[in-house]
Every structure is written in C-alpha cells, then in structure tokens.
Amino acid sequence: MNNATRWWWIRHAPSAGEMGVIHGQDEVDADLSDTEAIADQKSRLPKDAVWLTSGLARAVQTAGALGAPDNCRAVSELMEQSYGDWNGMRWADIKGEEVKGFWQNFATNSPPNGESFVQMVERVSEAIASLNHEYHGRDIIAVTHAGTIRAALTMALNMFAQSALSLQIDNISLTRIDAVHDNTGPAWRVATINMTARSGSLPIIFKPTK
Image 1 (spheres, rainbow, N blue to C red):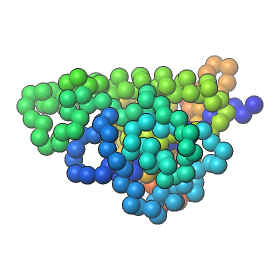
Image 2: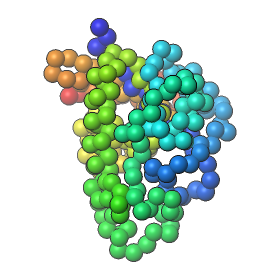
Image 3: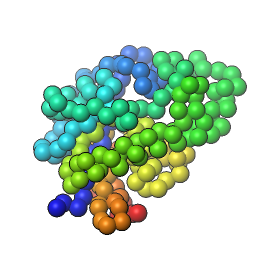
C-alpha cells in the first residue's frame, strides 16, 4: 500500500470583476484568460488523481480549465474564509472601530457574522483528515483558495496562524503537501509552496514533520 497521500493544491484563477472586493464565500466567476499559465500548471498535475474543489464557481471553473472530470467532487469545508457581513464589500470602504479591532489580531478575530482564520484552520484540518482516510495513498488535486491553502500549511507545518497569513499564495499557483502515513498518524512533507506557472521544477523544501 502506498504510504503517502499527495495533495496538489491549486489556487483558483483571478476573480473576475473589480479589484479589492472581498469575495470570501461569495460566488464570482474566474478570469481564465491566462491560458498559458493554466496549460503550464495542467502539465504538472498527475493523471490518475482525485479531483476536489470548494464548490465555489471560481474554483470549479478553474478546475475545469485544468482538466478536471465532470464528476469533480465539491467539498464545502474547503471553501475560502467566510467574511460574513463584509463579503462583497471593498476593503477600502470598511471603516471604524470594528475593522480596526479586526486588524489588531486578524488570525483570531472574526468579521461580523463571519469566521476567524483560526476557525477556518480547524474546519480545513478536519476535512483533510477525513479525506486522507478516504483517499489514502492517492494523488489529490484540490482547486481551492488562498485562505484554504494557508490553512492546510498551518496544519502541515504546525505554524502559528498569524505567521501563515504572511505566506503568499498566487492565483493559479501550485502548493504540494504530502501526508506520509505510519502507525501514529501522518507526518507532513511540504514539497513546494506557491509554485507559479512559470517557475522551474518541483523542489523539496521541507522534510517530514509530525
């Protein structure tokens, strides 16, 4: 039995429409105009893989452009962070003490009627644990969101959530994380973070950790 489950995380293509809008869990189309970047990443992905998306349109559309099958599974637990009342607003338009308090510790604080990044990490980690069990030893291509990928890295590297929010995750970038299984649970091996379409070969930058 293969003792590693390999996660190929792809952030969706850029969101269509106005820049600076908080989309969170809102529905918005993907801008798939960078066909060269999409083709480049598609060439890196394994052929016999399980395909997952968050179910949000921008992730589903990007997955389709990358070659996902029609029966690609949507996993709602892999959605972007919920920004609650701020979804659909522009950051520049959110003012006052509420947003000031949020930025004082934006890993643990929640937008009104939304979730904190720490809560998102818990949600994503639970989903990954379940999917690791279901697809043990497989390649999993997960087309999701920057926040989701940062949450996965927070879990894999046992990072402080605040530190993980400093990680740059570009659109149509690849992040590879392997769950190496043994009798005590998975050790995590991070192969690459934020590999953009025009980067070089896949480097190993972190060794397995518990």
